[in-house]
Length: 241
Ligand code: ADE
Image (cartoon, rainbow, N blue to C red):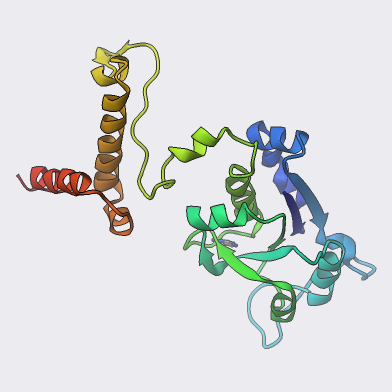
């Protein structure tokens, strides 16, 4: 999977040169190409931004410069994503969908934003990482690359993404490792029983319980079996008592 990142601050992307994403790049499972928008300024001072027409605070990235940067990477099958607080809020479903694409071009705004004409011309989709404002789209682009790359074949083992939070609309169950007793607290007995069906059932219940306690609104969007519904009803009763 190829990511072209159009940015004024390619140096900000150092965190993607660590750990799992580093290995995925080295194994050519993903390819992250950082394009410095400033290289496409034709101004003798390398100017990339200017004041907004109509007045107002800050500077805007110039449309011609952004367009030339885009033209250097554009491809028929690529999807162009603009990271902006005005976009649709990123979630696990969108991440899975994006991981099926071959080529994403990520446009990072900085300062007050980008001239609307080039946004209208080149952008397919606007994505936000949450209802708050960052100094630019670079951190959101890294969030997107990291979260999408996890679903690219070979980056993680399939089991890692099958059971994690949000994969089935629920939060994950709690996990434990050695030592068996820590601070006088023992690992739940069922996990050392070797009884796989009981472990599966316990994990499902803990996953429901975690979701009910921490993010109850997620339960509105999952299809539950009768047993699972009863389990939630009992949790509700416990809270009321
Ligand atoms: N740029 C600035 N803030 C942002 C956000 N919350 N999401 C995506 N891009 C942004």
